[in-house]
Length: 399
Image 1 (cartoon, helix red, strand yellow):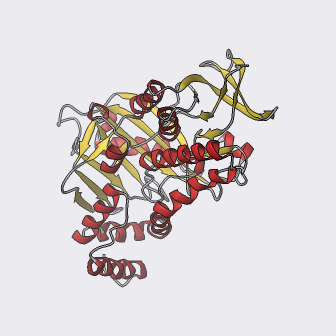
Image 2 (spheres, helix red, strand yellow; image 1 turned 60 degrees about the vertical axis):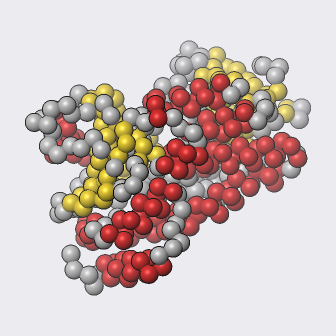
Image 3 (cartoon, one colour; image 1 turned 45 degrees about the vertical axis):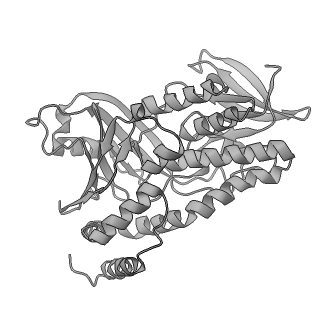
């Protein structure tokens, strides 16, 4: 057991955990960052301009700059949605997450590789037990002392299961993608654009979510997600690759993982543990976007932990969730309703894609996504969108 008593142990080194560790280390706290080796989350890799600005993401981490999205309906109707001014940055999680962990280490956090086991208490301090090493079979049991724990260990978090009320009842979508070499010869792959994200709203590709083809510079992410356990997500990705010609490209790696559907009702144990990122359930419904929200959540968790350590008041830990939901809760609610209604069947998906043809819908969607806030101006345009939305939902609009 290490004799050092760390201010905070962060379990999980993805965008949420690494951001929290970096923020706290830069403010002079003694931070221990524990992360499993070799874990790469399946992810389209999109990050909006606000993430680039808020978290000082360098250009070197952007493997592509997307300037449009293309929506594909069940009927194969295509709707193009140009970004307008600016771009959406794309990152490769295998590289990006390691960059964030290394940045935290350069700020002063102590990095360790291992698998979390459990938390216990002894003599007024919290003990984090883990298996040190890259492979659990050959790793050694180890323990580190701390005053506070931040669990950022992903969906179905072991920390949340052990310490947070309701943390063992997280509903998840399962996501799977394949990273393949990007096409270099237009004759091999039909209609691939390295500056465009393709989103497929088709029941054959996902019965309750969507499938995607996202450019990553020299590679491409092709994936899908679903809540239905009997649905073959590998089969869906294989079909999508075959349909687009991407089955001809070399497969670099395959990844799958659960993605939480909504934020936990509580993120702390009222004592010394707080969760963030996927462990807290902060993945946007409908879009599945998680990187920006994970990093924002990690920052709020760091702020809450700092306040807790400064005051000794465990109620400070609850401020992370309160602040996050105050800023993003309404967006999550709207996206949740949208997913529930529009992804229910192909008839509704068809109407949803048709709605995306509207220029006001496109403009307000991009503005909200790029800046991570609901656009409060242009009430007339929003009211028009609301009326169209209801007409499509109730079946009054024609497809």
